[in-house]
Image (cartoon, rainbow, N blue to C red):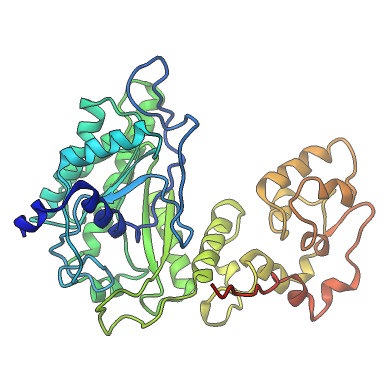
Length: 415
């Protein structure tokens, strides 16, 4: 194995270990503290312009240098392409190689930071220690001020997890699957209790850090962009209702900033326990939309999925429009009189446009034309609102309304 590794160039390792990391969707860099190199101090910035962004063919953001330290792994998680029984090319970076790559890529404006995960080698503590060494070297030895997201290793010691959170902007540990029963079935080496303990410990430390920094800005930041997690969608039989209820619990109990949903991708030589085909990517998209409604629009999970067959989101229309179509008696909404909570439930109105409507109507009554200047499109919205010069009429009660408002099917390209 070592002889094989010695023959790999840095570029070959990068090809293997960046490809191995593409299945991890946790790549957002928003919400961290502002850190910059204004005045010639340090290297990198989390806020400056000129950062390059790129996207994987399936649309996922890869704006960070997103790599694994190694794709060797002693665990044999059924859904993972890097599992110990997988017949894939293996590679391993040294700590020094990852540090050099990050600095070189950043100085060339290729990336805005580093996303680093790893297969588990030797022991959870050894692997976590290597990840921490990378972040520590970047922050302390090179004064790196770009974004760092570290994946935490399940079962690693709390001391190492705490140290990782001191150097990283965001840390995350994957719950992997919507239910602990499925996790035990597909990833028997990963212990749900260890994952819950790590998340709980992080929440306490993050809360303490926020309180200390309110008292003194000199107090050290502890994972200032919070913690996140990822769930694989479609590998087990879990419904969308199960997934969203698990997310609601994670947001409430552990204060997560984000739950990422990753549609299961079939892998070579996979277990018979896994489905033969991937779920539609639209399912992943609808879950993100529903997740957004619970966090920013005041919806409860049960509301989004009331009367949904099998606890599954409607793939034909977005969850907010689906809810409005099921509750037509609450529409049309008068944009000149409705409160913010009800306006947020109108299909076609986002949080920003609702705030603009509330601000504008303090000075005059709104016409449909006025609303049209505040939103991206009136095509759906006009069926659910009343203005001084507009009412939707009988169309709101029509049987064909859903078909009229659903996105038009697109012709697939042959090539």
